[in-house]
Image 1 (cartoon, rainbow, N blue to C red):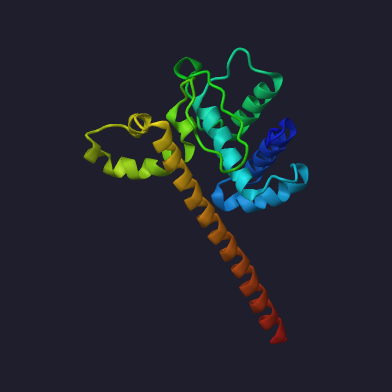
Image 2: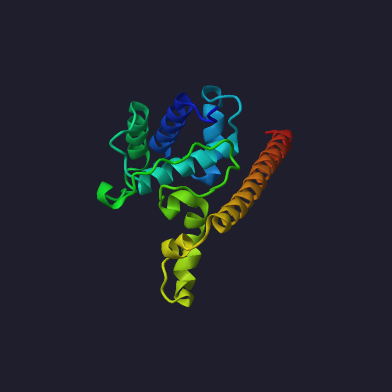
Length: 202
């Protein structure tokens, strides 16, 4: 059974588009909590905040790095159109330059890249590593004799890529939990200050 139904995907993208219309940017990690809370009644009950974050990253990576195959379904075409509304300013390469590859449906938020017979772009296979390592690689890439990050990651075997992606995912999970705790603490302190100020009287 698919973790994300077609209706879930459409609801997520529509919610993210609405967020962008309000704030001028697509949702980022700090925005996921608010996005999830606004959408949770429209999503399947087993989908949590972390799954929303990872799904958005996968959809963005798929939009930016793979072409829509000629045999695409109506749902895939709709997802593509909504993705263009959400990330259209981050122009996707032309179809001629992209593999027509279908991203496997994840079983849960912790599923891993296991390798595939159809070659996928590195940024699709390893979306977290590609995005989060990018800035570090730009600063330190000269030590790698000018090899691009895309090429370097492409040399990794399926098992090595899986390990790297999983470690980044766990790190992001930890950061997300820390951010949520900070948010809760901020609300507690704000409430305390509010009560204190009210107690001062006019």
